[in-house]
Image (tube, rainbow, N blue to C red; front, top):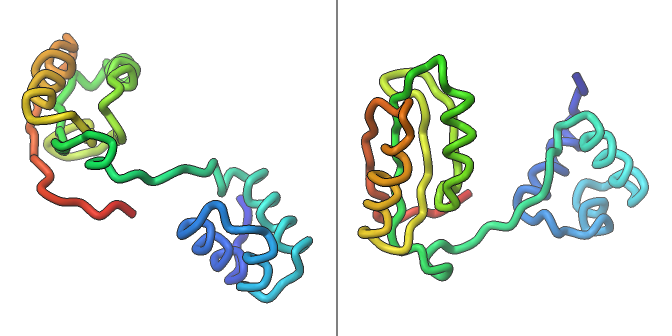
Length: 144
């Protein structure tokens, strides 16, 4: 377990805002040397604190005009198999195993409502270990 100080947290906040920030910009913002910033980022990466870098996109501009959270109840002994099947559905943007009334929460991005219906009924519900699902449409989202 790596201990993080305020400088490490400041670096992480910067990277969350802009993963493409230059090492010089990061170092300047947190008032350390470029080499120091590089060493801290390498240490956090090696320790698994930083697990990767990503790109945020606008779903609408990508042609995804229907988005929903789909809550899925499954046969709990089969969660690994269900997880693997759900990973194969390209429209599933995010998946989380959770406790409560439902076992899995999915963020699904689809071309339109007809495509969303197909994904829920013909792909998710077609998995034999899926007992039920509940779909909540997203009217607007802001990402993070």
